[in-house]
Picture 1: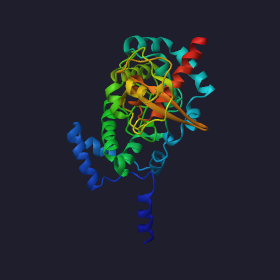
Picture 2: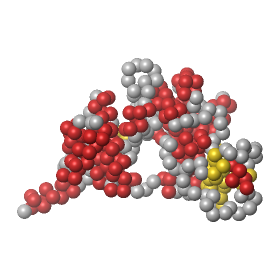
Picture 3: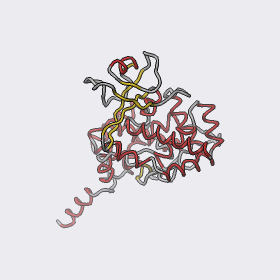
Length: 321
């Protein structure tokens, strides 16, 4: 009896190897057919995966739930700016080449890598296989998305010839210097230095080229402003401020309800009004297409604004030197 109790307890502990439950096997069969991935490989992946309670705990404490005045200091710091300038100087030739080829400015690429992994020094300590298994098969709220990413990770690991349990990443299964999810790694990673490998973990050239490629593929407009500080001359009517990252208004619509910026825009320019919480009130920004593109990397407007503001700090410090 004691042995039976110990066995039951061991099966419930975080880190115990996964059992392929009937409902999980059915999901793997569906993924195998939809994504054209070997069912045998998917089952093997699940058999090697381990459930981790720490992953479920982490995904329910997102940093983006913080107000802006607490969120910003997490990412825009003097040390991160110094490290970013050093990273930029060390990789200037690759960043310049990406700017020419992909039409994405160096400061944006450096800001992404800086916010995601502190320039490649903090790429995560969760086995990617475990994170995606845990979220894909034990987190019902987003199981369809993460189970698909689990399957794509198995495909990616086989293509890259990685041992399934080797890659480490974030609690959400993001990997490498730019923290690509498996689907993004498969679609947007590039061999930027032409060495025959797409290595986003240890090769800054590939990471730089891949982040720039991601932004290029999502329609970055080179040279176009990202965001502009705004003031309000009248109280805002209902419906102007939304959580939707899409550019749901035109500049004329915002201007007509009392939004003002330092320079005028064509009336039909797609825009969004963003409100950021400060300790003593709110600040407002009019954001444009390139801000929306940053939200394709992470849907949080706070994240996109942190990327933008860090990129401006990096550009100022880099060119000042």
